[in-house]
Image 1 (cartoon, rainbow, N blue to C red):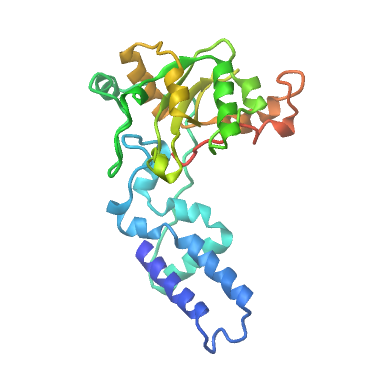
Image 2 (cartoon, helix red, strand yellow):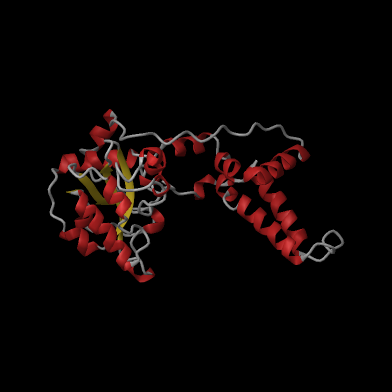
Length: 291
């Protein structure tokens, strides 16, 4: 399926990029828009054709959406292509003489922290769960640790990321107002493969995962860029075995502050949270929802 659509897109792009009778009366602007549409639609299809070239965002992390994509690899392309893209896909399938049933919708992100399986509990004894992606150097020892912090520290770390313009986090007042102020929150370095530290490439910071409890008791997980010296300065205060268990829980937590804020929107008010409903979503720190 992916190979068919890729080939058809390349054929159409080649025609649009050339000078021939079929495109002589089509303006360059319209042709360029069509080429961009086809490129956007098919850009990830080579990874479906050759899945061995696709690497996980984080080694050892398999969420419900990842499982859905493993079962139906076209699910992302189908559900992100819009009505025009879906019509194009169905047309190409029909022209090729195939029958194809589009994949079902993505599963909803699971709420709350998942319970640890027996395998995960045993794995927590074996070693640090954050594995080094192929072609990268391991994180230093001081990065292989999880630390408990309070809500004010989470906010301060976000403000630091915003002040340095690191790109992940800005210390939003909205998040500060909606964190459980009495709860422990947890932070540890867990970079996605494309965010793995690379000082020479201008990425000296560590992408950290923050397992945080919101005012309604739900645990969510956000991403935050933290400079190594800032993270190292945080005091170590969690037992080693519990650290590994919490890392497993954080890696299995599928919802972030954006999704939580979207659901909380109707409950948000200046009286309850200090924010109007139209401010309840979109005010969270920048997160990495592609996990």
